[in-house]
Length: 319
Image 1: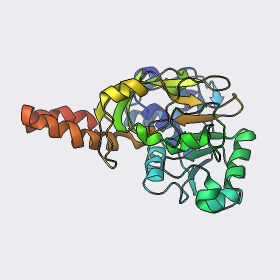
Image 2: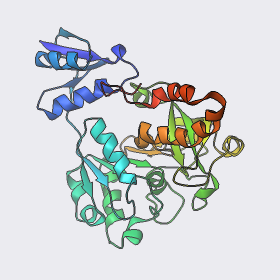
Image 3: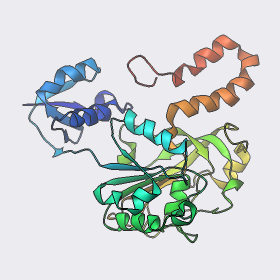
Image 4: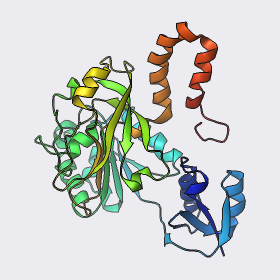
């Protein structure tokens, strides 16, 4: 017999996947099903404590194993860019190894399934920036032999085509390359179109944006996974270059925000915005702009109630 828990119980809550990841990490055999996950009956009590309802039945689906994740944290990335991914991965119940440029060049990716390249302002060619020979070639070889790679903002630029030193793993050139500061920073909506990416998520999600790549169309070997939706609020937090709604509408709205690499065998995904930054930075952006503007109009009580959706609930889920 097996215990199954599915997405339909909590369709907008990633706790369903987090529970599966943590169960696997503790040695339980967990399988992916059409509706969610299944595992041994011994998981039923733990799932109930996490408010996950499930049913007993026959084990089905494909057995899962946790991916071997390497998080690139060389000098070209720097803190806090890799720290956001670190928090996101642990929140999802996924362990990882942090890697420097030297470790990448020396072959740490030979024992990895996923490489994550966070944002930053120096990912124009890692050998040159890091002053270490072999980093670019190691990443290129890892992708060529079927490794999965995720890049956000500067990491997505690095995976794109259009400049010497970039990997050309994504078959698309950003509208702005070294002129990326022509965009700005804001909180925006991203419309998710890929079914796998949308699993457990609503149709649109608000994400912080900091000068990430903007693609006109995902053609040739790349595929569009999401597009830019509505501008939410201009942002001055960390970088005083707010992107106003008019300029956003002219250069970004409805253009490609998330795209995949050249072929199914080259499993590469580039995020223009920052999904890894999560609710912490989203709340900070709102506090920095929205509250300052509307507090005199509505008062402290109303602002406090308005921001409750940014707070973490007692069970660890985001309201």
